[in-house]
Length: 407
Image 1 (cartoon, rainbow, N blue to C red):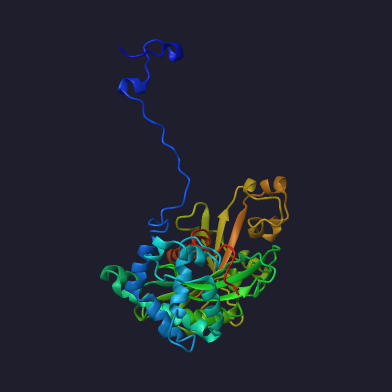
Image 2: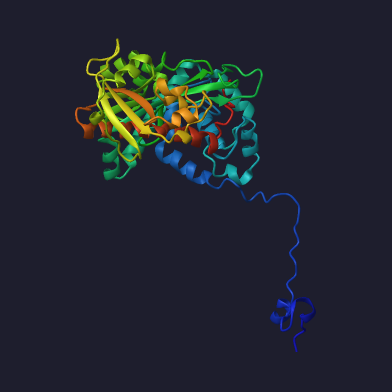
């Protein structure tokens, strides 16, 4: 007869161990040295396989050239690939290379085994500015090989376009007081400022610069765009290519660089007084619904600033807002998008307005001659957030959290 537990939980209940006929022994936790035959970074096996198939190390070595007199030890390709592999494994300091090196099992599957932090720092100091820029040419070869290895249908879809190049910057905070090449930004953070040109459809960075927290990207944007175009695979460059940039790039030099390269452009415009005055001349029936965006409409106006290519048009988007959505803080981003006549109103006055809109302005040489084409152009430009996802992944999924290798 089975022993009862009626005194614990009621009549007719029994110990599970008694029903099974035996009691399971509680497992004991043992504290000791980790098993060196196991690694927490098994995913590096896929990274090594990919590097081998694309010839990443060889392409970088060929583009950069030798970084030391004797042909022994690690080269530029192994240096950069080794650092990138460590970052993918979650390391965010050069000393992380030593932690990876101590992982005996992981070293068997990493693309560059045996790379120490002191070795990496010494090699990095040998690379000249011209060689750093040549890295882009090496990665361009890798991108071309990637395209050639894709299934024909997928490769054709990418190459035939439209091919989109996104320009954008992001601030990466650093904490070392002696870190070189950084500065204080407007938010009071000590940062470096990566400035990238990315192929949006593949989320591949084609060209990049590193500035400090005060650098204006407009000064170097035309050159960055030309370098990005040079790094596109030939098949992709032969198709339709277009460039997108936000209002931080509102300058005629970038638009002319795109025009001279025979590509389309769409650049955000700052909300300056001439653009607000243009709104008064737009009839209500000139506004048409935007694509995949609630309460949003699009209109087109004639506006071509000095130094901008002929044929530039102004694309305007307005989004109807509930006054409760607008913060009372004059520094809030949404309040800055309101018409100047409404921008300083507090909630009671704003709620009495017949309509409250947030406005965005885009200068483009795309075909916006019909409402459908204007809506399509605005919809395409709105997906410029792809490059922001790239930054987010680099900061959260990789090691671009505090710019460890700026010096």
